[in-house]
Image 1 (cartoon, rainbow, N blue to C red):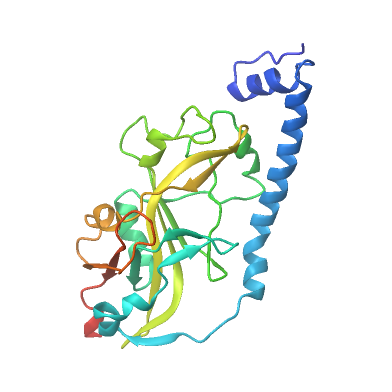
Image 2: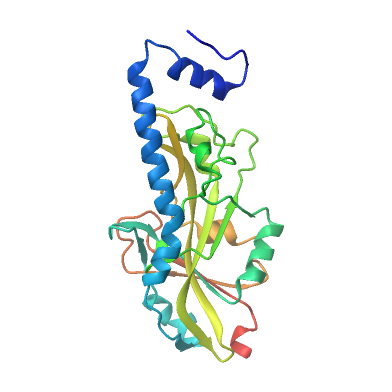
Length: 267
């Protein structure tokens, strides 16, 4: 069989599985899987613009900052559903204020932006042994709108690069040490001062293989840890942990972390 004369693991994988004449079934599955990934990626890349084109636009809801802080945090969405309306993640973080100061504080603590899914990053999904740093993030939606802020925190362990051998369809263990924050505009502005209110979550990231030769980053099941993860980088802000009546079957017992500037209620 034709072989690549190279030690590169990805080319070696292609050589073993696609150029060997005895592996016609692997070739067929690879082609079908590639077409599926290309189609799904194209849909996801174009989806934000398409969804925003049809999403209804409403004037912002005005709410006093103190009313939100003491009681009406409960009125914001508790869960993010996927595009077929299935609950996927509890929304355990609410931030009052512009995104830039929050992002700057988190960046100082090691949080970074991460490549989004795009046509340029498509082939990374097909890498046989990818690191989590190489895999793009798929956009997520809340009420028809894509996430506005998306930050990732790498694990402190040098082994936590997400490069794990697959067992079945999952790639567990060290990958769960990666953390992600996503925030969406809530449509609520706090008064006085017209402060935007954001809703989102803190969770873990896991490389996952829906089919054996495709690896994507998906959100794990580590909800309820927002205060534990954010207490140190946001120590100069007001933090309040509240609890919903139901956790909706997710980890974290329905806890929600409210974050605001110490001066927000004095504007």
